[in-house]
Image (cartoon, rainbow, N blue to C red; front, side, top):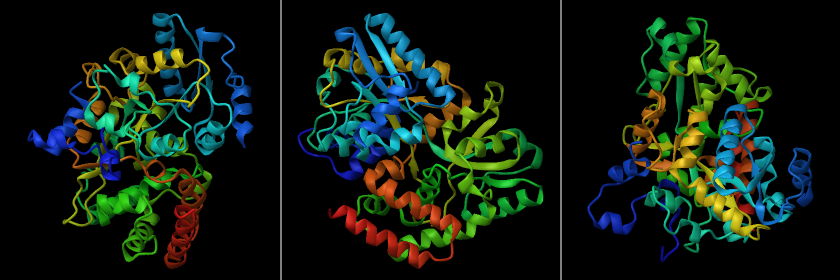
Length: 446
């Protein structure tokens, strides 16, 4: 870690020079990644949710933990993981859970106010952004001696200064999810190309199904659709450069993404801006929709008995020269505030979250994700989890997600309203892309 990593290396988990020199391919390396197996506003909200103002009133025996894992399944899983830590360490973890989107939208003010000792966040650009601002604590000593984390995971956890600021917990792929029983009944086959996807969508409409479940009330789900299309039309490097402000949003390449998306909108669930992702997931669960482009966490909205009926496939090919080797597989984990009130306890907690023991407890309670550690027990993985491991492991390049691969302020103040404007009025692509580029220049040069 003697030099700052490039954007591509951080976000895709590319092979470090030492590994490349050893003759290990990128694909083989990525397979090894997962193994086999207002400043006071959010603090006040955290207090309202039972977390106080971040003061570890219990002294060195208490660690405060700000969590965005607000949905039922992951919330329960994180609770069981923290309970296991409390039992083994003798420390108390005071968890302050805030609704996911609220947490994300307020993270900057939260970190500049009086945050918890440790908090949930994301790997890659968004982690490095706060580390560079001095709002996250250096946990390189936590990584010292840590086992089970690949070089790719370490790279995704490393700041521009070469120090570590993040501990990965789980990851999951994005894809087009469907119910196997519905597809078997209707005789549907996984499309390999965009033309085949459109033909399938038309067939689903004829069968009385919503072809693609869709929701964007929260602003972020549509980012996934943009990402998939951009990766397929323009390729991984263009996408990463676009996210980094190095490519123009009013370029012909980006206009083609929106033009292609506009052609697909008639096959999406209507009134998306009035619907949360959970509602769209339930349309898939109730067999009202044939597909849903989302992360594997879509399974959270399925009863346990129905999760075996879930399957997925990569977004189809659009340009044969680009193919389908680029995917999205966001990494979720935990970070430490720059000046924790209980630094020793915080680091104990972070070291625990990087162990197979912690991941095994969490994964037992939530089988809609897979573990980041190569030492996590994969013997109890469902067929869907096993497929996710293979899917991520065979990828040629891996992006995190639009709002994780770019500046937080650009994602929240420009891209969310921009994509929602597109969904409402998809015909003015020139006007939209011109506006996005103008705002990008303002933000990235500030």
